[in-house]
Length: 322
Ligand code: GLV
Ligand code: MG
Image (tube, rainbow, N blue to C red; front, side):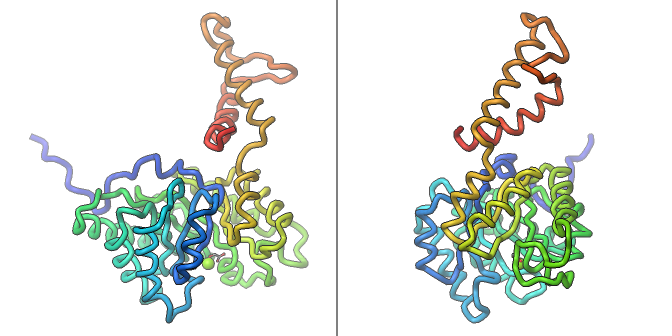
């Protein structure tokens, strides 16, 4: 008799649900601030991430872990994906961040975000730690997802292996501020192009993250835009990522949330057109429609590839309630 397969070192696959959560707007909330944690609950962001990393001063981190546990357990986060960003594995804080938050509020947490991921082993380590905590606490094993933030050259070079490292991983995130610093890019304005470079300095990075994410069926999220009063600038930068196919962007201020939700949803007319393509294609390929492979819709020829493109827009539009 063939023995049953040995238990995996990691965990069973997380549900595809995790990889299709709305993440158009991902709101950063300092984990050390009960006031911001309270306020965030009433804002229309698709996702909130309660931050133990760079928005939290080193001396505030130990208390912030407990402030976050309380906010997750006692707050009303209905309709939002709940994420905690822990500190990266090169610090002394990561394990205690994960243990305190997941033991204390694992039932009310959707994902752990790991910043400055540099290789696949860092994801595997987080996966193993989560699995142990889930088993110890009697939680469903594998339910808590991972969000991997790519913020330096090494992470970018290894992003394909990072994206494949754990079935828990739901999304890859670009961290432009740390990334620009790590490659010595000559600018101080996060999210804007470095002065003196005549093209898009982020194109290669954004595309590489997108390819790795899609190869492994993950979502992909653009990072912050720090000029929080410049909503037009935010829209422009967000629009570039949305056009490439990104699923959403970080927001640092309530004023950026509506813009992100709008930019990462299809325009109504594009959504209507996508539904029209799907209907027309379904009819013309059917028995009644003559089982055709490609057909004309107005001036446009549509075929199976057009159907796939339309499905992307229609899927996003339906999720946005258009
Ligand atoms: C976000 O963490 C960034 O570094 O841009
Ligand atoms: Mg960062």
